[in-house]
Length: 319
Image (cartoon, rainbow, N blue to C red):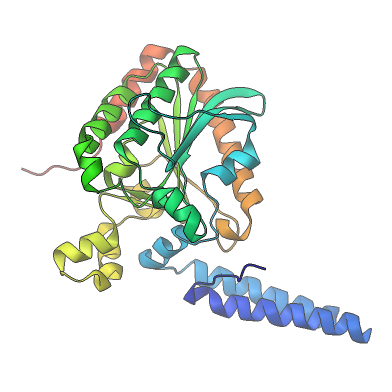
């Protein structure tokens, strides 16, 4: 059985939950009535979870976004869609395994769904390149976006990446150009686009598939121009200052909703999405269904105009 991975601030909750489990086993084995004591401990665990998760630092939220048991794009595809048909390759160079996409049905509605995919064990992480896309990944995504436009299918995008792949080969094959082209082309795609940041949303790696009519964030995801470690390495020349960098970057969903960078925060199950994949997916599905209903009723010229205006409004300038 896979060993459960626990973050430091989760430990008090997990230890109390183990006591509850042990007490239930003891009561069953000894045929004792301990329901009152068990109920009291459960209430205590809920209070503890609520207190801890209502006071998380930005760095702790970054850790949650990276939790190894957090649901990835394929998990959401499995839980919220049917008839998924994966499409491969950019028709120029290769099939980037860090991004997965294809046509599927969302409660009967035909959509294109695409997103970065990480791995859980070492083999999968290497196969998926840790969710870091190459230029061919962005070109693959754009090819699928154009197919969705051709067949008039709305697009759902799930973002979860520590950044675009920074290797020499990626630069030689035009990483920056591929991201820039996607940003330009996505701004004028003639179909509704809904984006959900499900984990990490770092820099151009995220923005290369991140232009849409609505941008949502899960409660414990993050989204910013650089990872906290990268920021710390530049400012302090020491990645151990990442917690301080996270505070300065203001990268959480709560921060970005205040700055009008994202449109909505999608709540996660108690303790984070990694505790209940199905519940997290159902919440995301409800938001997607409601948003697609709304966007598909908007005339195309207005949809495109508002999409452009949305991104032009971002940022604060002082002269």
